[in-house]
Image (tube, rainbow, N blue to C red; front, side, top):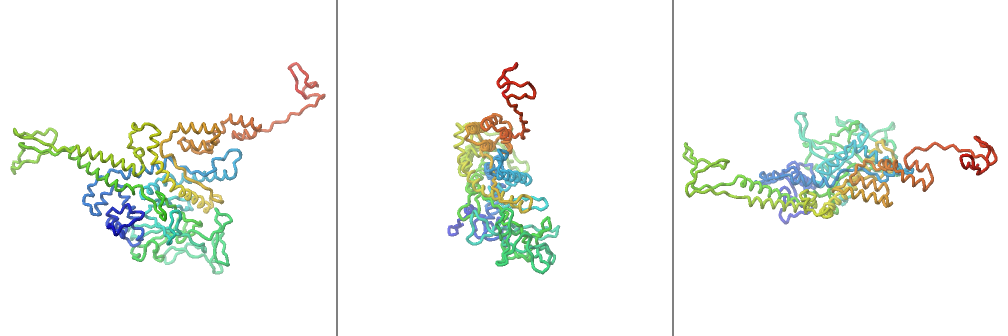
Amino acid sequence: MRLRELLIDAWSWLNYKQAMADPNRPGQHAFPELNTSWVPAEDLRRLAAYKVLAAYDSNQAGQLAAVTGDGHGVERRELGDPSKLIDTTLGYLLGAEQTIVVPGADHVGQDGPAPEAAAAADLQERLRAWADKELLPLRVQQCERCAVRCGDGVYTLAWEPTKQRVLLRTYDPGFYFPEWDEGEQDAQEYPNRVHFAWELPADPARGLKARVRRITYELAPIGWATRPAAVDGRSVRELVVGGDGEPVLTAGDTLDAATGTVTRIYPWAPGKPSAITCYLTDGEWLLEDLGRAHDVFSLPPDKASYRVRSDGQVLDRLDLMVDFIPVVHIPNSIPDVGEHWGKSTLATPLQLLDELAATDTDSASASATTGTPIVALAGARLPMDRTTGQPLPVRVEAGSVWQLSDNGRMDTLDTSAQLAELRERVDHLMDRLASNTRLTTAGLGSLDPAKVPSGYALQLALSPLDSLVGAMRLARNHKYQLLLRMVQRLHQAGRVWPAGESLPARLVWGAHTPTDRASVLKDVTEGYVAGVFSLETAVRMLQEAGYPIDDVAKEIERIQKRAFDQAARLADATGDNGAVREYLQLPEADPVPAVPLVPPGQTAPDGPPGKAGEIGPMGPGPRY
C-alpha cells in the first residue's frame, strides 16, 4: 500500500498484508468468494480481515502468503502459536465457570421473603433451567472464541413453538451485516435492521443452483394481521381480511383512528402501549438473478423464495410480537468512539507472530544441518560406479568407513551455534508476545515457578492479565445482561413465563487466576463472625472462590437449619419461639394447652386444699 493510499480504520493493523494491499478490493486474489456482487463494498475489509485471522488460527498463514505471491510461503513453519494465544485468552476470559445470577434471589427463605425476592428467585431458576436445555456454556464457548479470534461474535434468539422455549444460536460474524442509517452508528446502539447472509453452493444431485440466503430482523410500526398464503407457487404472507372486506388487527392490538397508528401492550411493559414491533424475513435468492445493482441490503423481494417455520408460518415479514431485535453483538474489546466492531486478540501482535513463524522456519533449517551435518572429504578413496566410472555419492551413515590418504582429512559444518541463537530468539519473541498481549509469561505458562519468590510477586506479575480480563469482561457485561433480558421477554411473548416488568439478570464469570481458597475462607469466616459480611455475601464469596456451592439460597437454607447457636441467641433476644422455628426452617409447633389456675382457698383437682407457700412432704408446693 503506497503512502498516498494510507487507510486508517478498525483493520489498519492488516495493511502490511498483501491480501489487504488494495483498499478498494481487499482479498480479491486470496478470497475470490468475497468478490460476488451481493457483498457490500464497505464490508469487504472486515470480511477479508476475518479470513486472514482464520488462516492464522488454522496454521494456514503460509498458504495465504503463497497465494498472494510469496514463493516461500509453503515452506513456512507454523507451530500453533496463534491458536494457543486464542485459546489461552479465551480460558482466562471465561474463568472456571459461568453462572446466571438475578440480584435478590439469594434472600429467599429468610424471615419471610419479600415478593421481589421470590420473583427474583423464580426468574433465576427459570433462566438456569433454560440455560441447561440450550447448552449455554457450550454456546458461550463457541461465540467467545470467535470474538477473541475475529474481534466480534453474534448471538441470535428465536422462539421455537414446538419446544416452547427460546433457541440460542451463534453466527460467524462474517455473516452479520447491520444496516445503519447515516450518522446513527454507535457502539452501544443497535440499528433498526440487521441482516445475516451467506452463499449456499450449488447441488447438482438435488437440482439446486447457487443461492444466497438472507435472514433479516427489522423494527417497524405495527401493521395489520397477516397469514401464510401461496402466490404463483411461492410461499408468502397476505393480509387477513374481515367479513366487510377490510383488513383486521392482530388480537390485542389497538388502532388509533385519529392517527392511524396501531399500538400493542407487551407483557413486560404493562400500561405502556408501543407502536413498534420486530419483523422476521428468511429467504433465498438465486445468484443468477442478482446483478451489480443488488447487494445484501437491496435484494429484490420479487425474486425471493421464503422459508417456512416449523409451525407453518411463512417467514416473510413475520411479526415476532416483540419490540426489539433478538440479536446480540459481542465485541472482543471496548470499541473506539463511533465504532461498532471489536478488535481481535491477534491484531496487535500479528507481525510478531510472523516473526516467530519465520524464526521457527530458520530453526528447522538449522536443525537439519546440525542433525545431519555437511561433510567435506579430502584425500578419500571413494567407491566408483563400474558402469560409468564416476564416484558414487557419499552419505554419512552410522558405521560408514572412508579410507583417507596420508594427507587426507574430513571437515564438518557445525551449525549448532546458529541453532542455539535461533532458540534464544524464539524465547525473546515469546517474552515480547507475552508482554504485548498482556497475557504475561506466567499467564502463558512459560514462567518457571521456581523463579517466583513469593505469591505476592506472582500477583504483581499477573497484574497486566488482570487488567486485560477486566477490560474484556467490561465490554461484555452489558451484552449478556441484554441477552438474558431478551430471553425473559421472548418467553413472556410465548405466554409460558409470567408477565411483568423485566428483572435484571447477569452472567457471573469465574475466577481467571488461581485463588488462595484458605485465605478467602479465613476472611469470610472472620468477616461474618464480626458482622461485617452478611451470610449471603459470605456464601457468594466462597462460591466465587471456587468452593462447590451450586445455589447460594439453598446453601444458606442448609446452614440455617443447623445454626443452633444463632437460634439460641435469637430466642434470648426476642423470646419468640415461632421466630426461632422459622429461622431453623422448622414447621410451626402445635399450640401448648393452657393450665387452669386454682384460686386460693379452693380445692385443686388432684389434691386437698392448701395454703399459699405451704411446704408439703416433697418441698414447697405451688402457689395458687
